Image (tube, rainbow, N blue to C red):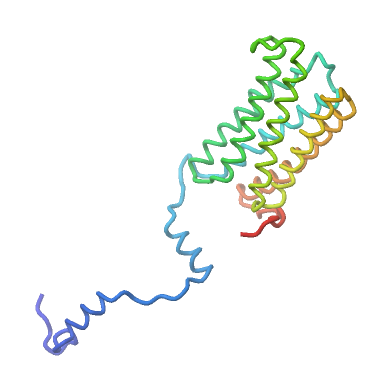
Length: 241
């Protein structure tokens, strides 16, 4: 293209100066948090289509219905022979819904949500297999080991749930409350099994109702947000970033 002899680019030294200016990186100071958030938002593509949305909108109802069913069994709503009454809900609704929600969270890059949902999916699915296995003799466990098998199951999940509670203290306080109450319920049920105490089992069932109630509160916040409303206050994290 022709260059105007009177333009700045046609003056002696102007080309070299422009090239030097391009070759020298601009000095940038520290990025403000708000500016950093804007940069990350622009760099992260918005998820659209079938994967858009919040995985908790499915994961929370799945978790709540299983928690209520388990609580009703523990408080004695059915006889000891009817322990499997909660399994249709736990297998077809809770475990399946949490597995779907886990893959959904992974697909949209919500690692913390996938972590929590995936662990709970494993808990509910393994609980269903425990009850079915002990009832039908699937795993070759004799009558003498029935009690020890339940203690083993509860102990392992107390370790995992306690680990999950401590590892997610940077989440909102409502999520910490759910995980903490799950820990308490498992501990009560474990002691109830060891001591053969129906009252402790009922206390574990009552605690299950409590973490289901907190889950309902979180779900209302999620439902409000995904339907265009305001998010509900879930409390400050125990640990700040």
